[in-house]
Length: 454
Ligand code: TYD
Ligand code: MG
Image (cartoon, rainbow, N blue to C red; front, top):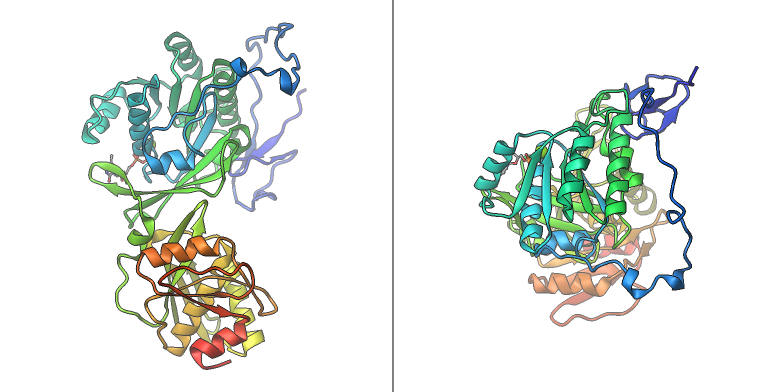
């Protein structure tokens, strides 16, 4: 009898026995039995002698070099892709349901088609007429994109062989199924098999394929993480429902820098690119207020200014609350501990809320000093000058470490009308015209200089 195996629909880890909680990612009720290939599935032909032949690197002559990348003209998308679409690549676009993946990809399909790529948009979720209606609403009704509504992967691949497109969009992998896997669409084994078939088809035929993957909370449907390792590029489309901003973030890219972001705004006519995100993120900022600090960050290759907001208030609970939106919880706990241990500023008995304005998610350690400043400013009820940006990493000893790309951060700040920056001393000395850089050597010195305590 064949050995049974189990896998987690959230992270794809496999196990030899079932359990209620995945040991790899900690999710509950996500483990289910893998259904293998059905008996009598199509036999694989043996490889021809030419296939799998090894070639030395220098033998790859110029005529075998891949054709150049295609830029679609939407700068925010091209940059996240690493400078345009690479031929014969597999791209996964993950995101919460309803965040705007179909909208983004339909617009991208139209753009790439206008640039001369033969494009097919395959929807497994909507009928062709519905996709056309959406295209009409987005003003793309005349775009030379072919539409197909199909979920059987074998039929799709047959169509692709006939049509020979250069770009295929599959919306979404959770709705597609292959007939030699014996389980429902959306299960871990189906999603893996579909992604594998599509990826190898793309590589064999020189087609780029973009797959949509919904991030799901239920255990029965496999999430995009299950196929991340198979594809060349993984992009996540993020944003808060209540906000207009959407951020396309590269978390893996074989053809360009990871961590690159593209910023879009959801409008009545679909997604519009945001060329200057800093101006957008700071646009709602009012008068200087205690707890508000502007952090000069770097996302990928681009500087982005965001406002960090903190609120510190006496806690009615025995266990004070620590709530964070847009930053790491553990990192906040660390900053609070360092402030207490190294500067003697306790937060016990106080509720602490931290929010990154505009629905942005910050991952850089260089945000430490801005967070500490926001917390102190809220706690002491002192506002920092409104024309100042802050950045720098805090170590457990209370020392400050300079952040990379100081000059880019300061230039962006200067462009947006800021006249001062606070950053750790050390590192390269830089000067930006019209902006005063104040150095802080350690956290105690910083607290003393700006909050008169410590
Ligand atoms: P959609 O692309 O269908 O999301 P996904 O494919 O990720 O599930 O986007 C759906 C949301 O986008 C929906 O709530 C409405 C909003 N939307 C707009 O605000 N403007 C538009 O022009 C379109 C097409 C959608
Ligand atoms: Mg959709």
